[in-house]
Structures are given as structure tokens and as C-alpha cells.
Image 1: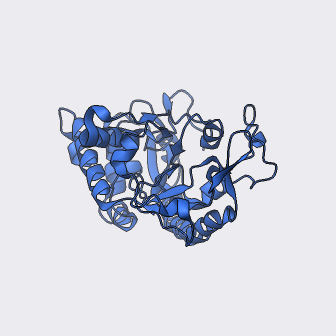
Image 2: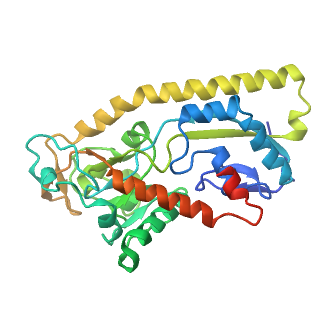
Amino acid sequence: FKPDQGTPRSLNALRPGVQFSNGDAFSEPSWGFLYNSMPFAMSFSDMLLFLYKKDGINLAQGILDARNGTQVAFPVVSSTMQGSGYFPKPLGRPLCREGDAECLAHGNGIGLAGLCTSGWEIRYLNTPEDVLRKACDMLVGDGNNLKFSPPTGGVAPLKLMQNRSIQGFEFVTPVDDLQEFFPINADPPVLDCENELDDCTQNIGQIGARYAHYPGWHQPFLFSWMHIDKSVWEGLSEGQRLAIKFAAGHSVSKSHTTTESMQCQALRQMIDFNENTSQLNRDGSERDESARITVVPWREEDLETLREATTAHMESLMGPTGEAREFA
């Protein structure tokens, strides 16, 4: 389907909504909530129930229509929970391998308060960034010195890490992370990442961000939606429209199941990738610490703080009609 080029569009790959929509119809937070998962959103199974059994897709369409949208929208693909950050220190108690003295020395980790006062610059998507800012203000007040790098489209987090511009980031699922952030192991050892990403020679464990955090509180799942101009949609027969929606619904469930079946193996490959490999300095010389990726669960008390911050953030977005509270 070719879009009507005369219709105003908005392209935004960084917000929690879908990437291509009518400029006047896209709005947060209700649109982002119905398109995708927000921090601490409902589970994927509950979202499926909401969309397909509780009229959620029609509710989303009604929001677009009320905002003078000229498109029909429905979900076509989904994915699983993402990782919630690669950092140089664990925020909770890491699942250390036996004999990993550097890992074991971190004990229970630095916690959310430690992240807030670390002075690091990290890359997070906009809404989770807003929640982290709120949580840090709640925990440490003026002591909050955590900085954020804009999640600019086309700028790879790996390159920012290679250049030491940031100290941590979240990205996608283990399957995607394995492909994106482990280009090579230790040969050649010298870093050259000033020009093209292909010149980078250190993976994220070697750079130092060896602690992979879970669960993905910031994005428990992913939905991607298709937009079709109403003029095109209404030109199809009823049978064609039903067939398209049936195929889209099947694709949502199938893509989630397929993606989920691959995550454990990919995470294991990431964990084993830097076996017997040390972290490297920028010039390629070795540091006396393992580069092995290590899983870290967030502390329960920190997740509770993030939940409270999410609620506070969403309430701060509530408009005069109460729309944000109603839909988020």
C-alpha cells in the first residue's frame, strides 16, 4: 500500500508508539500505550486479551479517528521482553560464575541509588528515561547526577560505547543484542571506532558493560502496527479486509512465539562469548577483569521505586480531560 503523500505524517522511531502515523493523530501517553508496552505495562497475554477480546483495537482506532486520523491501524507483529541495561557495575546481586572474583566482589550491587549517583551517561528510550529521572529524584534528590544520551535514530549504541561517550544502554532482545554488539572477540585487539562501525574491534563485554540486567520493566513486550490509508482500505472488499486482519492477528501470536523460542539460546551465547576474555582499554591493552557477560536481576525494592515513578510520570502527563489516566 502506498501512502497518500498529501497527508501530514510523523516519523518517530524513538517514542513508544509505532513509527509511522498521522502527525495530528499521534499523541502520548494513550497512543503509546495502545501501540506498544509502557514501563510496567500489562503482560503480553493480557494485552492480547485486551486487543482481541476486549475491543482494544477498536479503541485504538477510535483514538485515531477522534484525532482526525486518515488511517486504519492494527497490530501485525510482536516480540518479547527486552533487556533493561548493560552497565559496568551490577545494580543488583549478579549471577556470578564460580571463581569470578571481580563479579563476586560487587556483592548486592550498587542498586538504583548507585546508578542515580554514578555520574554515568546512558542511552535509554524517552519514556523509560523520564521514569528513571523521576525515580532518581525520589531516591537521591539533588544527588542525582545520572545523564542521558539522546536515543538518536541511526546512531548505534555500540559506537557510543566504543568511543566511551556513554557507559551503559538498553537496546532490544538477546537475539538482536547478540547480533549487534558482539561483532568480534579479541582479535584484532586495537580499537578504531572513530569513523565506521565496522572498524570497531571491541564488543560490549570487552568495553566493560558486562552486566546485563533483567527483567525488562521498561518494555515488557513489543507490538508493531500497520497503517493503511482509509481510502485504500475502503477500496478493498469485505473479504479482503477480513483476510488481512486474520493474517495480521496470526502473525502477532506466531512472531511472539518464534522470538521467545530463540531468546534463551541467544542469551547463553552472549554469556559464553567472552569466555576466558579480559576487558580491554581503548588502546587494546588488557585490563585485569573478565569481559564475560553476567546476568543481573534488579532489586525488588528498586523495581517498586520504578513502579512508583512510572505512576507519578503518567499522572504528570494527564491532560485536562483525564485522557492519560483513562488510557494509561
